[in-house]
Image 1 (cartoon, rainbow, N blue to C red):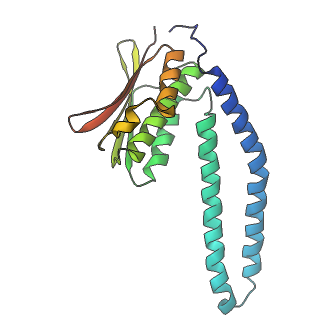
Image 2 (image 1 turned 45 degrees about the vertical axis):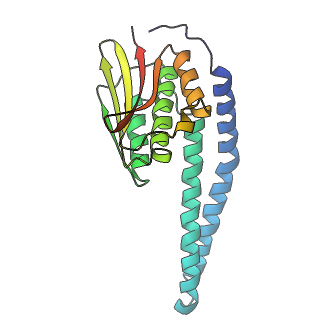
Image 3 (image 1 turned 90 degrees about the horizontal axis):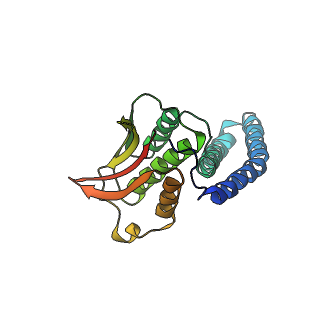
Length: 211
């Protein structure tokens, strides 16, 4: 593996990390206070007669559901801005697939032995997969997405394959997401193959030589 990767994306990574830190520090106490207030309200409702409690309980349940959704949205934003460096890539992708599978699509991971990678490479591969799955679900309207992580000789390869219609023509222009993938791939001397339709499936690839 080439140790001296060009720092093409480091300013963006540093900015994202600062934003993630500020978001975490500012929203954490607010979420705690919100959940504490909802809990107190739940306790107060328990003392009311059933006729008074029922309509308020339904509204409270919806507020609790929205609070949970807000917490998940913030957690997802933090993960996208600053995924944990030094983590196990296979485990990170497994959690990613599980999270996406709860959004109306089947997302499955097939991975070989967990590769030992520098933190920077782990983040590049993780963000490639995350962006590619998002594109498949959002633009391709895929009902199934397969994530594959494997070695081919000395190359570490990640494939994202979906059954959707492929990206619309206007998304094939280098937008922010594609520019980000290309820049991150170049920063670790990896090669990226943009999404293309083949045999009824859409496939995109990230490949990096590890020796």
